[in-house]
Length: 545
Image (cartoon, rainbow, N blue to C red):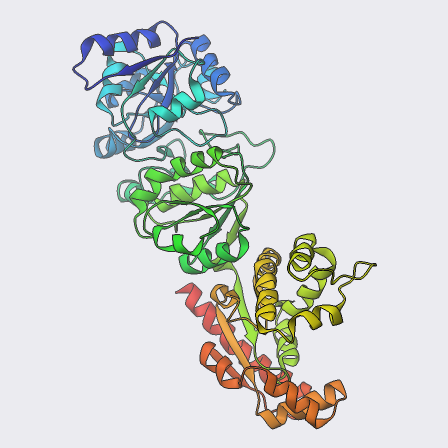
């Protein structure tokens, strides 16, 4: 099939408007521009034409379509029992990015509504498309003009990527002004229910309707067997080829999490101000953190663009749920199959300090409060056995430092690094390249986390913590503890203590300090537990605020 491109300058170009409308009237498929995204249109009253939409997109048959109409006077033609609230919404927001779910008339075929007794109605804010609807004199059923599952199209070029040769025509109406699909509100229930966030903010709808319920499909996947009541509710949508992980919550912590988690060469979607954190990644920016309009306009283009790269994973910062952020976050989460890391749901305490200060007892206190404890030193030694990437990197940097049975020959590695500051720095950088990524992965799924890291500050791990805690003790106390713990003499214990950074370094770089002068580990643990209870209460108050 040859796909014709229509470049229509305005709604007064009657010959081209009529030619485009003729495709709809004759049962063909026509991609149309709207203010939200491009739609793949057909005569909504022609079941055969609507079937062709599903075939061209590869769209599941139970995914209902939206009827695009020219104004509110069309509502009574295709809907029954239209409530007064629908006309109030139309007067306020049409033409615009709002779809209303209403009871359908029998003239609307089952294939258009996915077998539902309701239908979505929308008046798009695009003069050319409105002129085509009037010229065709039928409602146009038009899901987004992308292959099913792919990111939606916000330019005619995007449509050609997916639909050239599959449909009869594409109307080039320029870039879409909004960039995410319409907001869908169900007016057949009380209170009205938000089924899909979109280009019209929930806050604006509430100004007209008052109470509005938010469907669970906005924030999570529908269960197996549940029937979607509106487009985009059930299936994984908007997805590029590479898997997507969404990181939500505080923007700065989310960006730092991605910086530590993303492997070299990964794709990153981020706010403009955080792009410098990802020098070794393929980055797509979507505007400043506060610019929700830019996020909506750019998000689909960002997702689609990664299919032109060789990235094998994508990490995306997520706007908060205010205004258009609710819609952008919804699209990102659907692209990710709801694989979401919520930094605001994690309470992370990073603990550091010199040897002999009593970090082990302090960590036991945090664990007694339900924290998942990750010991970075233990993780490093585990990865020396299990991570082929880390083992290969060490072997590449330092030669044959692994024994025939695969274990690290620590003496051989020590001989390479401990007498050579540059070599020691190279080892440190090698570990930092691999360990934080695994650490971030192991944080997932836990609400309270304690991280024990001697290089918490230098590694950047502190940047993802809610609280950084320096555990210190007077040097003479530390020396005595080291002697008792390791069974060594005072001279050796003193040398070990002095080889580390002084307590002042940790105190100056951490937000909290716990000076441990307790006589026994049990006393340390008791004091630390009370200390943590205060910290966690403060975090809870901050989170609720």
